[in-house]
Image (cartoon, rainbow, N blue to C red):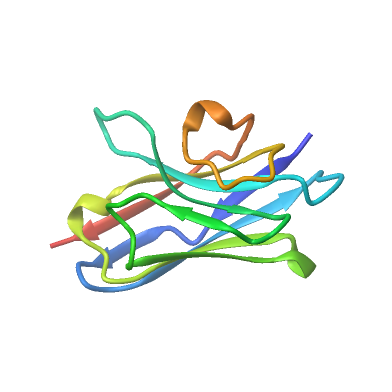
Length: 124
């Protein structure tokens, strides 16, 4: 079963940048999709971005398109989320998750394995 550990969260000013990392292990093939999700207090968990390890296709939520970039370093078994021009509404706990799929998915219910999350706080 896939295991995921997030890192890189912290406090950043609005307009700044942050890079989150997701160290992944336990994959038996490239037929997996890794996604980043976030959950703010009192709100439902939402999909932010995902990447297919098979063909590197990506998908983004409209709220982060053009500001966030997802990428993967397979040699390091790590998936990154580069967050640029962050806004206070990006404040949330960010989770990475994995599912056995070849398409870039964004619905939390489609993902089976989850990390514990890392807090991102954007000050105005």
